[in-house]
Length: 353
Image (tube, rainbow, N blue to C red):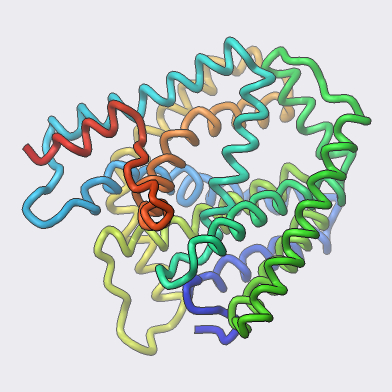
């Protein structure tokens, strides 16, 4: 494991560092054609990592059940799909009825989901630190492009708002939001890092400095559309897959196995289980794209559509991760009974019968 990685962070984080730095380097070397050069790895990665990382959500609840209470069969599938698709349908309705509020809600949910996914998973890490790290990391991902590429980021937000029929954000409002985000992120990180230093958590501090540096470089060096896609595919999605593999019973390869061989083995392990829903998801996306193609005149509209589709499935996916995979965090705060939704809660309680 690289020395910069503290206990509680995945030993596979260096795969994401390498991928991000390679793509940033490519984009900086050939800025005029960065979209074309990064388009191929992003398109492939969006399928085998981005879409795929949510295609094993159905295994999260069963993996947490005690021995002898397996959640299997059509009964479980009906309950799971009812809860999952019901939540997705609710989000779709919200986009239709209150688009502006839903855009804000989507960004806030993404702050939490991406931030908590980047936080240390070790149970020995105090929950207060985990919570602070989750919020600060999520805010950082939004604050850096809002400062470093303000005009492009504001354009991306307003294009999404226009796509769903909502009023655009003014430059003054966006600027004020960027200032607030910047103050929160800088002040919060200063306090968090001071806490690490004061308690001699040098491993955590080193890892934080490495990751924050890589992320700042990513979101400043590349345009928002590319940087968001690179982060989602090669950082968030890849790390979720590697974490979930542990839940699904993956056993690491022999000691000394080459890092690339280990990564390939992990991806094969995951994709074999994700294949059925991944195929269904890809077909559904192709059909949706074909139906809506006449109404999508340019790349801007396609990107906005991708954000809306992502938002619709983010809520059930994020709730599964937060309330099941991170359940021990909430239990330590006395919130162990938090639930996914009435339907998914019922599914979790009744599937063993």
